[in-house]
Length: 178
Ligand code: FES
Image 1 (cartoon, helix red, strand yellow):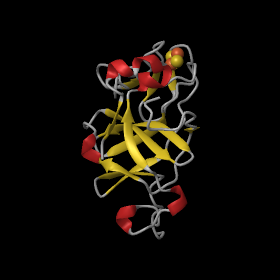
Image 2: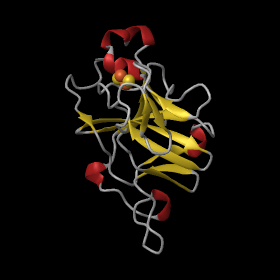
Image 3: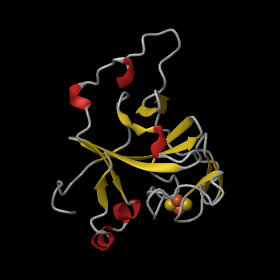
Image 4: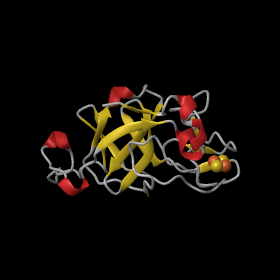
């Protein structure tokens, strides 16, 4: 640990809707990006894959052994960016469904982290249903339950989560992005 956070930081596996993660342009048009959302109750680790104007979010946890997929920050995709890859044992996943199509957990699926694009920002939760009062997106006027509001949104080298000893050599491993 880096001394600025509790020794026992719980790992969360979902986030409430309506959290603005950042601008869509934080992610290259066919890229992916790591997000860590910290709450009082613990931290959520996820990543978002962008396909032009569409985004697909997943919990950063490989179904094979439960590890964070990337050993280098944001390296979630294959060289040609067509598939999500796990850096540990080579599992490959479809970018738009999270379905594993090759590797040791073929047939399994990444856990979806619902996200959508609103006014060129990436926001947690599914897009508001057509014809309904949106109510989930900051840009459409919804408020987030203060109890669930994140303390901060950070980026962490995934490798730190599975190899804590590497943290010092990575210069602390964590930096605020917003
Ligand atoms: S932990 Fe992902 S393929 Fe083994």
